[in-house]
Length: 311
Image (cartoon, rainbow, N blue to C red; front, side, top):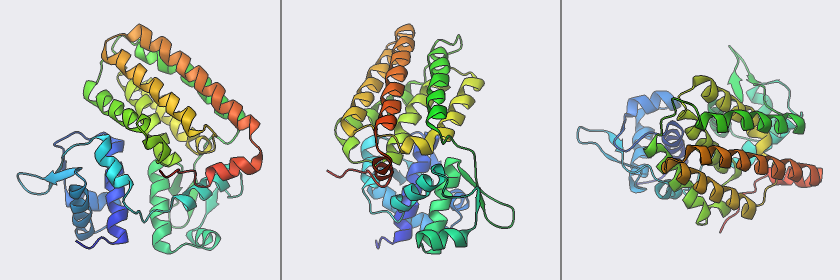
């Protein structure tokens, strides 16, 4: 099978969709549904699904189409290393320019094409990614508008203070119900990072995995206010979080803490887990804010410009 840039791009998008929606093994994927989701015809969707089949993420369904085979971290690791049409560098440059105030609230595609020297196809993919993440939206008729995000260090620190209030409390909610398959999947992802992938994944991917774990835990509370609040905070802090300067050794330590936290929850130790969550967030906030305060502006900028470390 000839693998085109579009196939690579679409396979990565479908894989990210599976991860973001936490679809479980056996879930059915239709060419029509994916085509409507990503605004493409069925042919490229079919090619992308065949590429995902080779990676072990999907398999042919008994009644046609494809179903999810094994939504584990190792299989997604394979697709993470497929050469991707997506340009993380441009994506991170746009994020940096937005947080730094170099981009206005509203922009046109032509302005972005000229500024970042992109083809229209590449820009379309990057804009879809940004829109899916919730920090830009298309305006009726013409142009795009950036949505509010955290841009100051004080607001970033305040977001952690808010998380300190809701995340430990969510674990102690009376209606808390452990979603064991989801948390075990998150644990597999964190173990994958600890085992070495932490030094290879991009900042954006690391944010997705870590925020996904915290959201999965809060979702077990079955308190819609806690759940919605954390998702909103994660959307607001995404761009400034890309600029944080935790080195990967330190980030690996935080992932090890995630493993301890999940193991406590899987063992039914909710009180201990809530206290551990509080300590984890306090230490993480201190590390990130201190890192942002001690780095020169030039280094902060370079940190955002593609800190994906290859093995």
